[in-house]
Image (cartoon, rainbow, N blue to C red; front, side, top):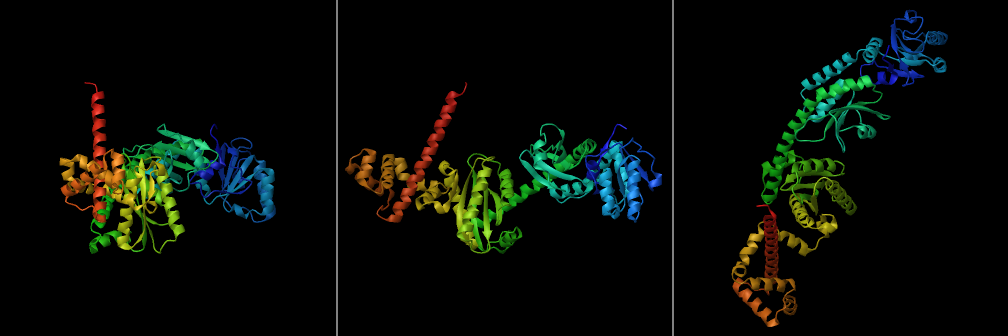
Length: 529
């Protein structure tokens, strides 16, 4: 016969009758045919496929006497067989096993000899039947009501009898029934629709997953010892299973998007109503595993440019699984907001380790997303959770423009001035600042410029005059006039701080508007009429 079979392929077959080696078993041994008999007398005088080329399957158990066992081994080998499979082959004594190794006969145990014979037939000449068998098992799995993608993969793996994995070029996203070796993953070609690979660590048959929302995915059946016939059959099985997997991905993503929206609304409600007790809201938080008791460390990851917040959420959620703390993350605005929770006050070293883990997460995220990350301080209780999230948002706002820190800022490392300035960038502060300084903006912009410089130079008349190239008396006159127009007393520290922040906010807003207008004008001029 032109077809061959080897022990490795049989061991990899999911329906091999419980086959396992007992002695002298070489997985690379090649057989051309298989003979099944109820006893030694039923075997042909020579191997049916030629000398040294066959597997003998006996349905009877080994004899009990050592000399009889030795005699059986010699007679089977003398007839040209390279392997003997029979029930309870473990009954062969040590001496008989040594003899089998010496004469080159593989001893194999099998629970069900007829199931083994069928598996041999499928691999030798029933490749279409093998493919149909895999396809039938996949069809049965598709009919199963899975509760999620992971559950569907578990059922497919159990039914087909091989490992299964959902992968992309970066690595394994989900798998069941084993672990896809890194070397096998590296060998998979992500270009063609179907692909089969075999390396020293194992084999895989994979197919492109036709998913409109997730590009670059493949579904792979994998295992060790698989031969070309099995890989070809598994490639067909993967192709049949793929639409069900793609549909499950879409169903799960719709559910995840809806859940993310619910979580985002819940967090926003909690932050906006932090001073109000709401039993229903607290129960919803508990249902999600959000426990406000204990100690919390907030973080905020925002896009420096436009990012897909749901994909960012998925990435961060996956990365947080490796952080040794109770973690939660939700979509929020143009990024995600999350926090780590600790039942007891975390030691400084524990906090540093958590911040280090968040920094590593940030570094990994930046490989795929243009983001900045802010980390709050450790706070306790419900109010503390809101406080650390607010702090993380302030730190993230600063991190957006901090290339020197790798766009990662920890609020505990910031000064008061930096925090106040980050707060002035809030959308609600700029209009208030413009209203406060309205008399200067509309009637005396030169007074606003002088007042801003005056406050920037710590209320120093001489320093302001030097910076603006004005006479000191001019500066003094302008400051007095600005106070009159605003109706404020700058000698009051709190008033002076508020006006200073307002000046900074208005100036930054004006600079941003000027830059945007300049860019727009430049683009318009460069456009083709």
